[in-house]
Length: 447
Image (cartoon, rainbow, N blue to C red; front, side, top):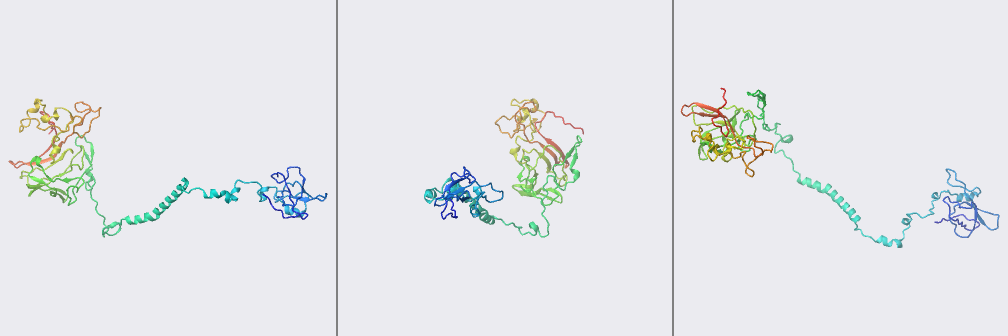
């Protein structure tokens, strides 16, 4: 790099050649030296100089500059001409001269060369990994913005379902009077059940039992067709197991005046002469153990015979009126693998002998004429059985470990009523029906 000097001396331009300038612009040695004047462009001066008149040969003296004073922009030699000092007053720090004396790493960026850079400027391809990634990012960003601000609003508008009150008034479509609909009394405990019935003291051991389900049947007009009620369902079948003369129909079961009504009518229906009703809770709600309370009024006069009203509970594996669910299941309640699970409670050789005598006088005096327990504890692996199975550490009634648990369908008759056709006297019974049976069983009776 070089810099032009505008001042003239003796009518000629001065050139001062300084070998290897120090960082502060002063000659390395000696501190004072002379250089001949030549008629050419002057190199960048780093020292302030003056012309000497002691010799006929015109020379230019260079002297070491004084240390700059803090706050000043330049330094002057000890002996100098005022006009020259004004023109050549420079800071000892080259960085403040605005003159770059050495090459810098980024100089090539400021000095483009079309010939040198021609190949670099025209070479290369846009389809590089970096270019594709950058372009892909821009495409994804553009697609996302379009979907967010254009596609999504249109789709939301097109698929939006307008809410309707279905002709109702007010907020939420409530009717004009502002009343809200009656959701229904579907809790396990009826809201009409008095609090006095929430707890019961056992007559046996004095323990307190808590109410878990109740139905007062106070709401008029309830129906019990399949799906109408969460807990009850009216049967629609012929109860052939006891040779009933009526067909059970759901329309014969209703509620009115705070009562559940089961009606029997002389009406030809499904090939039978009578039409009646039966209400069940099969597969609706179940419980194990407990205390069963009901308020029942028997129909008609006690002098009318032929009726058999009843209220009873049945094991949930069996369904009243469906014989396939009861065959070999009712009324067993047994969890032991022994002769009690066999047909008629006898082995193939006819033993034990007590199972064949002093039994049912209408069936050969045998103790039992049941077909045998279908889902007994004697069930082998691979045979049909819903389970569960005992753990290896659990035993049955005879101390045998493992195997299936005996399952069956016992029956508890809370109430059964009949009128004797000969005496026209009514009879009411309560009973439990479960098998197998014991020979000469003596009921515990304190009355």
